[in-house]
Length: 220
Image (cartoon, rainbow, N blue to C red):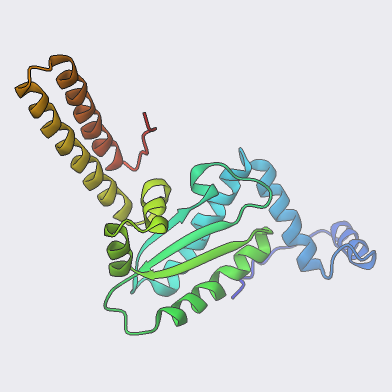
């Protein structure tokens, strides 16, 4: 459902809008105004990535208004999260819902599409939401499923902290593995290799700390 934004325009601007419609550039005054606002916002943003990130944040807040009782996490992933956007980039959003939700996932997904469509139309972007049960997401992640692993590694949370939790656990798991490897090397008197493994153990611990602040460290 589109949200009306009341405004007043001077008569010369209204006549200019009408000329644009008469010339066939737009179907209506509203379409012309929406396009102008979209272009203004896009030009004012630092980059295409930033513009799409703003659209993702608006979409997330709109989803929460309707589904605040069941939406546990909202994540933007893909090119918007990685910063590698182009003119053809979609706004990919993953909505995780409570395991105890008493309605079908497909119905929720249809509803999410309905509330985000006006935002996509007004901004001239494509918003692609996916709805998944939170428990199912975690189950697939533990199994190493590619999509959930990519989202966990490179996505950005717009609501709640599931990504930080998963990254924290993963980095601590790697830290424990490298610490154990360092112990084995030390028992074999391989001191240089021991130092190397210990270094990477500390690095993983630092990454875990950064993950809790929603900072994604670069791979080394």
